[in-house]
Image 1 (tube, one colour):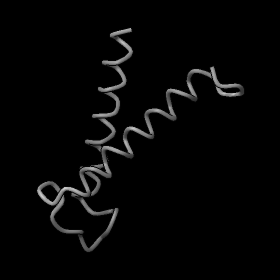
Image 2 (cartoon, one colour):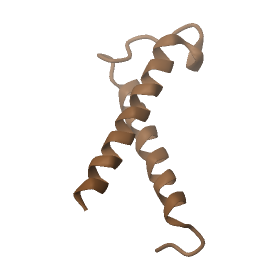
Image 3 (cartoon, helix red, strand yellow):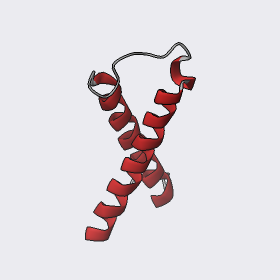
Image 4 (cartoon, helix red, strand yellow):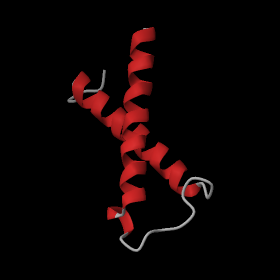
Length: 68
């Protein structure tokens, strides 16, 4: 256990890290994200990729925790 960080904070940090890494991988893949929209991070494709990354991170954490 990390001193000063409870389990919920640790889970939130893991979730954020996983979601960020998944999003970065999707944005770096030209087959998934071929062109930056004119709206930047607020564009429709970017928002969809953010939602997908969050859902993937949630599912991954749930699967790992269910295997324990």
